[in-house]
Length: 247
Image (cartoon, rainbow, N blue to C red; front, side, top):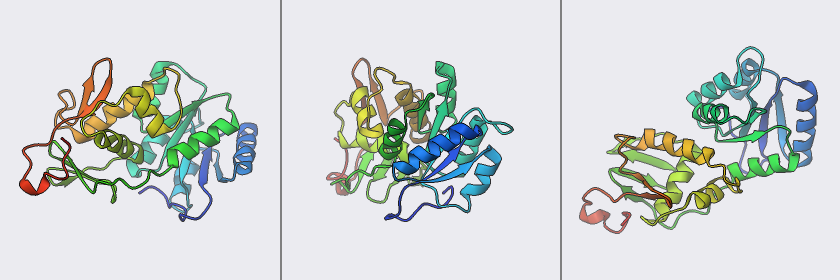
């Protein structure tokens, strides 16, 4: 796990990584006004040193950093754990956004930033769903335990980020029914993207790379063209699994 997480009853702690002093000061002040604890870093190197000793719940990462750039910082944070990352970019080109999401970001916002929207993004990313009524799902040879937040494939643990896990649980909860792209964006990220589905596309790819034996021929996360996604059936369940499998 990257960094230390704040206690459950503590204010949300944000690590703001931004080299522009004026932007950093304005954002930090606005986020503090929204009730967040804000830690500041001016470079990727400083930020990576901070996460090991500072209680942090979410990272706001500017992609345009001196020295170690934002993409490299994002990959380093993701390699070290599942700390939620929102990348901040002035570049809205599809390739730039997708590269950032592929590097491990959970979400992105574009400059110029609106403090209220940024705060809403942070809260949406960190919100917790009510515990699922099911204690387990079996999809293919993948077992999902929503209460413990764990996933295993053929008995081997699969590490997912919080966002990937929430996406998988949303699909599993539908128990084989189709979930539209718009529903997934709203339920997992908490707000509308007005037709921009790059965020979902990249996370589906990232999820498939982890849960499928062959991501190009998925058996767990299935695409329903023109409609959305659904989960596949379990592999020949044993009798004791019949009450807990997706049908």
